[in-house]
Amino acid sequence: MFAIARDPIGPHVLDEIARAGDGGIVAFVGVVRDRSDDGRPVDGLSYEAFEPMALQAFEDIARDARERFGDVRVGIVHRTGSLRVGDVAVVVAASAPHRAAAFAACAYAIDEVKRRAPIWKKEAYADGSARWRENTPA
Image 1 (spheres, rainbow, N blue to C red):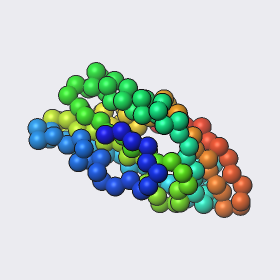
Image 2: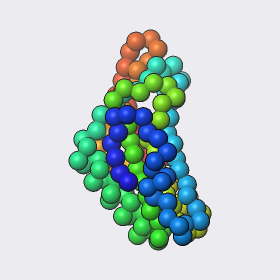
Image 3: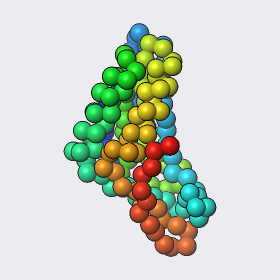
Image 4: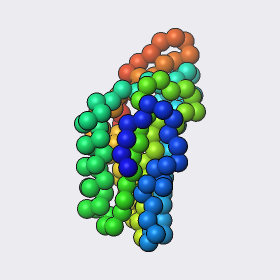
């Protein structure tokens, strides 16, 4: 399950990656915060993506997670367009037979999305200004 979404993201990512033999499903849900990293009040964000490359990056990240953590499945969905404070911007989910691998794969995947996917974020501030922000992994 890999997608660039223009509409709100629902819980379907979990349904897509869950398998009967998996004992652990972990999800990271990234939401738009009301403050930027430098403390300025944020009104919202705007995301743009180069969709074909982003989807390929998602697939590559999932493949790399399997190579690193074994029998895991990863799903990644990222929003584009204008989002308000509190809106879900990204969901990364991982499932595995055991929780440790699911946690590790999920953490790895969100960091790699930030690092590798061609997705750009513009913050809109309460004072009316805006700025493109660089994606940075944790």
